[in-house]
Image 1 (cartoon, rainbow, N blue to C red):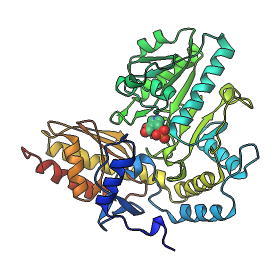
Image 2 (image 1 turned 180 degrees about the vertical axis):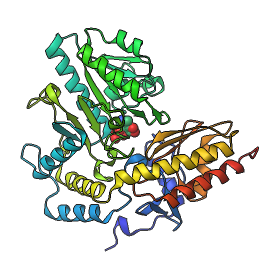
Image 3 (image 1 turned 90 degrees about the horizontal axis):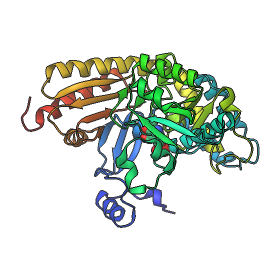
Image 4 (image 1 turned 120 degrees about the vertical axis):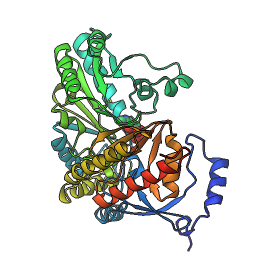
Length: 410
Ligand SMILES: Cc1ncc(COP(=O)(O)O)c(C=O)c1O
């Protein structure tokens, strides 16, 4: 019997149906991807693409890695889901492995980055109130941050453009400029329970927070007795060449959140904590029907096997160094087009000059390379961690050609 999956869609019909019945929360690019393998994607017309976006930092072990496919197949034939009212062996194994890698003690499983951050926010509020009374619930976040789209996490996301249509927003969040330690110090009064930040701000253009700043933030949180929440939803899982981006800076959070790449494309979110933060939630405080279910955990355990077994963090460090060095050489050749190359490992941004990043993204797509544009000026590169040096070179060449094609040339 033919199923929905057997039908090869004609791209135009997909665009039309989508336009008529899917909420317009995304400005989609006109491609229907139907198949993926490793660093490659194929569209409905059979065209091949080199994927330097990996589902926005999700498909880190590459598309359809055989170990992940096999784990999902086996688990789906055995048992896909049990309620969190019962023990789940895979969930406890995954919690143990992730906590070991992240230097944490306990994990809560959810289904997305926003949900992982919701859990972190709830822990911080309960922890703060228990320490300093009912007024201690404020969380300080950084301007230009991105923590998710639920009401609490969009409020943590210190960007009015995401917030204003949805006011009134939940109380309890304050914002300071990234890098401004004096402002952070002032914000850390008796009513503050936590600081929450991304070590590398991903959605706002791959802004790497300096090591010294992160170390000073860690010291300030200790002095002020507040929790430090590290949102590593985009930067974690080996993307930067270490398991967590914060490990480059030699700091550790009290709470760390992960999602995206954890289960290789199966939805999952993780909130990990240590010390008193790890002991804060009690039965009845928090929960999730799907969080940490067997299928997602089986996929995630396979992802960790691949990450460690195939040395993907080492590969991310090595290929990321090469990629950024080649991009910097390109920046030197095209000083009128490239303002800055920044990032860590395979989390890389290129800030353009006098050229629209969306035009370059579209040209690259036409040339068979998938990347992302953040606003009008920044290109974002988040390839699978399996990427090769040659693939990095190919993308640099495609970028050079695209930059030279836009009006005004070199
Ligand atoms: C740093 C960070 N935190 C949280 C989120 C939200 O994750 P999700 O879309 O899975 O809710 C994202 C998504 O891009 C992110 O980059």
